[in-house]
Image (cartoon, rainbow, N blue to C red; front, top):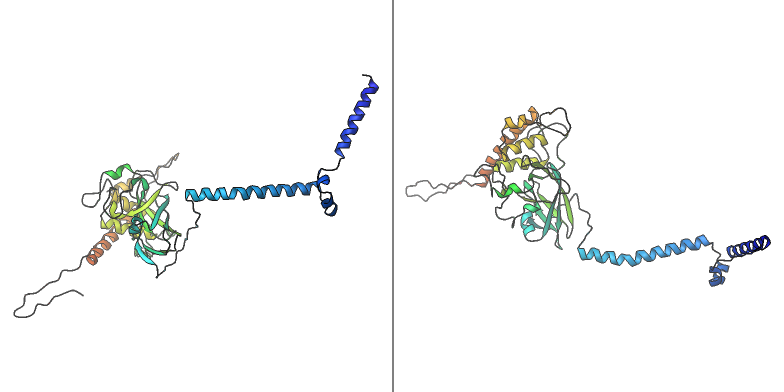
Length: 348
């Protein structure tokens, strides 16, 4: 092929490509009248087509996602953080309601000294649940039949007579104890809520839950098993009665004050280890904090915190003694009479 023929062929190819490039878009052959009345650029048409395709994808996939969520039982309910008291709602004990399937309880611990309790009302009517002043947080893997009877969550170092079900609790994750209350700690260095050790706010254990809703409550706690790993947000925990692990009334009263959030967390922890794990105050004072990579090992508890722990235990013993007098009625006395009708003496 000669040079002239090659140039001629290239010119013809270029002419055809240029002709194809300048050709009208295909839309003009299908919608000539529409485009004549409503002129649109190629970009506008492309954007409209893309949006249409996106809408079709969302519409067609939405039923599938809804069906999958319904099949797995997933619900998306925002917990109520400040539940109101409903006087007209049925009042139930939290653990009786769990056994009856009326509510479910989940504890999400931040660590050993606190977390959040989620309580879901599974019924179609409002419920008011009564939560004891002191409860324990246990791993769901350490669960037992029902909440009514003494179970198998022992504190290994408890003394005889003050524990329930010793032996089986040593293999489970760490247990924590406390109660429902405001944020843990006062932030002002005061070991007791009002400086007098009275811990105001204790005993407010009634919480109303609307039908099929969830409430979120703050949980203040301390570790009950020295030496075991702390729970975290990924730990699966729930609540249980204190009687499941200990029948010691002094420990119950201590956990009640800890749950109020009106005590120094370190003092409360030292007192809890003294009662639950039989650690002497000398052992607690000598316990060192050993953070990873630290060159020094400061004591875990200061002298003031040890003294505050001793005072907490003394106050817990006093409250336990007062509670036992209230719970045990004074027996009636029938004095000897001579020909008179016996008079029953009852202390007012």
